[in-house]
Amino acid sequence: MSIIENHTTNGQAFSEAPKLQARNVDVFYGDKQAIYDVSFDIGANEVIALIGPSGCGKSTFLRCLNRMNDTIDICRIEGDILLDEENIYDPKVDVVPLRARVGMVFQKPNPFPKSIYDNIAYGPRIHGLAQSRVELDEIVERSLQRAGLWNEVKDRLHSPGTGLSGGQQQRLCIARTIAVDPEVILMDEPCSALDPIATAKIEELIDELRENYTIAIVTHSMQQAARVSQRTAYFHMGQLIEVNPTDQVFTTPEHSLTEAYITGRFG
Amino acid sequence: MDMNFNQHISGQFNADLEAIRNHMMGMGGLVERQVSAAIEAICGGDTSGADDIIRREDEVDNMEVTIDHECTQILVRRQPAASDLRMVLAVSRVVRDLERIGDEACKIAIHTLEVADASNSQICQQSLRYMGAEVVKMIAGALDAFARADVEGAIEVVRNDKLVDKQYAAALRELITYMMEDPRSISQAINILWILRALERIGDHARNISEQVIYLVSGTDVRHTPLAEMEEQAQKDDSGNA
Image (cartoon, rainbow over all chains, first blue to last red):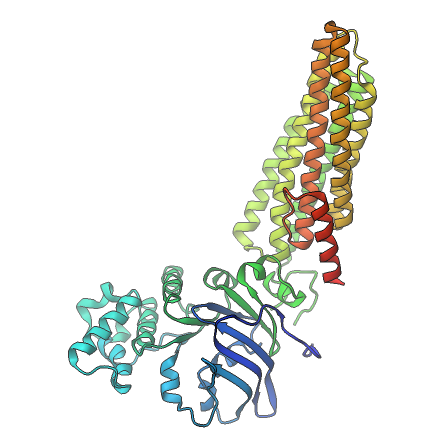
């Protein structure tokens, strides 16, 4: 099976209030092309789910959105990715503040080997967001509150973050991301290592975070995509096949490949 | 990568979906026979046929419960999406309409037994025959459209429902004339009225089944939609797929 010639993405790929805009994005790992001419918007205060079979390019694409692929030497990106209409691949853009604006949560919770407090305080310290200890305390508390973790950890802020359960660690990582006051949060399969209760808590959190942030989530769980997102984007062999409102994708998808994938006919 | 889009990766899922569809078709066949037999009973005055219909009513009810349970199992175990989800929802809705058609057939049988005891059982025979034949055709047409995912066939059933409604109104006028001419015919006419009403309701249920065919195929919910709008939508879907 090969890529589709002259493909244009089906559905509603563009947003009236875009936060991030991808335009004709191609990604290469050495000679191998991983993403083919992807164009779509991620709207402000929207949760968009990126789904597709393994190796379809959804994680690669997600990592382009905060230039995480810069760390891979053989990775080359063409096309434009605009954050608030500003090209994040412009040579003038400094990736450190960019990654504060566009934060990321990974598949496996990866707290620093530090205390819970220091995990959260790390970002605000290096970005100079707090002028005093009191201010820093406030940021730590607020971030843990927003991540729904405060009540569980407020009495042991100085114990190691690695001592928390998997679900708590993941919420700690979300709190750490929130602490630097990002505009966009990228999540790469944030619940795949978690049990159903911890997953439900993260999903609940995603719904609350949408008020203040724009969220793009890569997930292998179609039920999760259906539960948390407003729009769903289906990737296949590096091409963006379809973007549509989530309820439409899961009841009447436009493209036969989307239909075949979400009904479990391949993947 | 397996690229046969007709089959799920899970063979059991294929089998489960196939099973609810086949069971629904089986139930449809039984219900259609019940209605045919009911019409035969009233028009032919065959009371033994009417007894059979009343006896088999339980069978129809049990089928509804069984198929609905199978649909629930698929929802719980497979979390179906897209066309699979529409298939499960459509089957679950269709069996409810089939069960109600079964009820109506049973009502016709009960009134047939009452009519048979009376002397002047010949009133409105032509309307009964005509409407009876028409609604049996509608049930068969709706099930056939479901089996073949045939939107045009489904719309044809909706068109026929309009004709049955008109025939029902005409038959009512005829009945009123009988009752005015000869008040002794009133109790008999009321039995016939119930039977006509049952036939008209069967037509409505066949229409409902057809609406589920359109939902199954295109995802458009056309319940409570006028016929003209339905035809327009079908045309749009058709050109969209071309």
